[in-house]
Length: 87
Image (cartoon, rainbow, N blue to C red; front, side):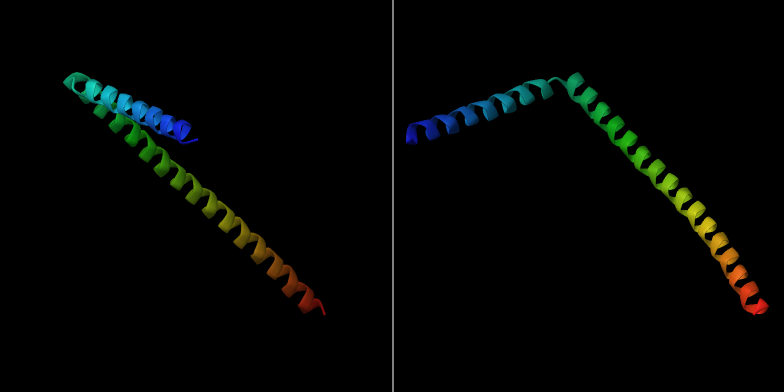
């Protein structure tokens, strides 16, 4: 059992080392590093824009429902008042 566990740890260490080595090799090239930074920045900007857009859509929807609920509540109160006055 100890051998299989040790082998798994070795394989995991080998994979992590290979991934780190590949990342270091990739980012050692300035143009690739700058392209990655630009792509990451664009992705962050798109995510931020999406969040802001979602916020305003949710706010507009909330305002519409709130107005509709207020209008329907006022109509219901008016009907109740009319019924009370008729009594």
